[in-house]
Amino acid sequence: MNKKLVGYGLFFIVLTGAFFFFVFRGTDNWRRKIPVINYVKPFAFTNQDNQTVTEKDIAGKVTVVEYFFTTCKGICPRMNTSMKTIYEEFKDEPDFLILAHTVQPDTDSVPRLKYYADSLKVNTSKWIFLTGDKNKLYTAARGSYLLDDPKNSVDKLEDQFIHTQFFALVDKNGQVRGGAYDGLKKEEMKKLSKDIKDLLQEKKLTAAL
Image (cartoon, rainbow, N blue to C red; front, side, top):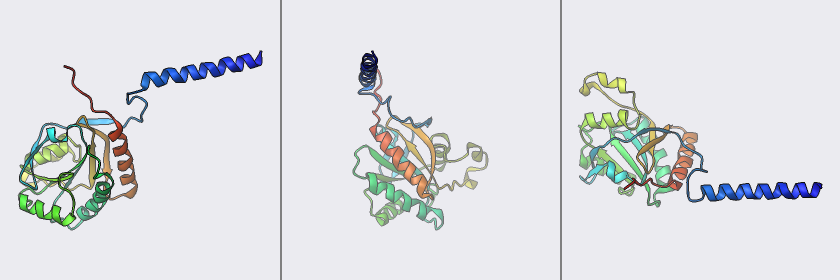
């Protein structure tokens, strides 16, 4: 009798496992879910090659986002040292990008961004440097990527200055995931790396016809 019960129990376990395998096979439902905290609003900025980059260019890509300025002598070099490790790890992934926005568009012109990108010796089709209208750059930081407090926008635009060491992570569907990652902390970069790997495994949602 005991052997029969054990046999029935094992059969039930196998049957249950098979059920869940077929239910979740081909989906992302079994994966660890990184929280969705926002979504990317439409944007249009200019890259280091004087080309327009929009939200359509990051569709289907896992994208890490930062804000910096080329003349920064404080946290920016440390941030981009951290970002370089992320770049080196994922530069060969076809569905991966980095967007680096300047917070000083008045001084960070297209040629200056090009010079800065060249100094880092990176592939600028994978790590893209962006400039543009200051108000739009700051609105994206606050309204899309949540890298600055929206209340900071109450002052005059010319007096505003975003200076953050945090990175944002965007999935293939334009959703901001997981919160901000501190670019000055190694443990935060390890978490970012793990989350990037998880998002690369997720499938891009396709709109219903």
